[in-house]
Image (cartoon, rainbow, N blue to C red):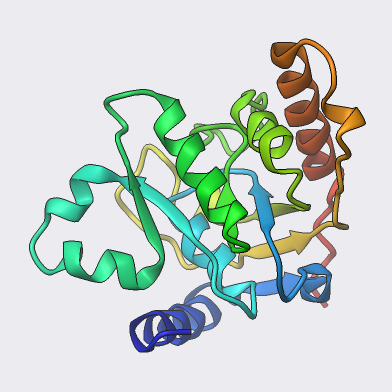
Length: 207
């Protein structure tokens, strides 16, 4: 980890534990090296940094290209492994950015639902995640976050200090055979498969 990333990592970790009693269940399931797609449900703006501190390795994030134009922040984003994409263009720019990260042997987090949930419930998966998997065959780790919606919902500007849990699923691996057939159908099927694994994760009762 670079100095800026490391500083942000430990600061986020401290805030996560102090403010949200943040815990990660089955952290050991996240591979320590090699290309990796962390597929996570999306409840809040808190999700990306919490996904980051759930890992013992660097991960990459996507962010709107406009953020890189903000003074100071624009200089920090590359050091935080943030990859800018043109949100005003098309989703393909984001997909291509993730594919580049994975082919370079890195890990990145992506939200199959595409956007934050309004009510905290799981939404339908978009085909973009399936396309990324089909193009890279990168291993996928499903993640499910609980409590982030209650802490910082989409329609609110207030943060509530409530417990948040991130549950890590078993690694999913897709073969070339899994990616054969009509591309649209394949992408949709893979995305739905991943979303089903996210939905199957349950939050253990806190002791």
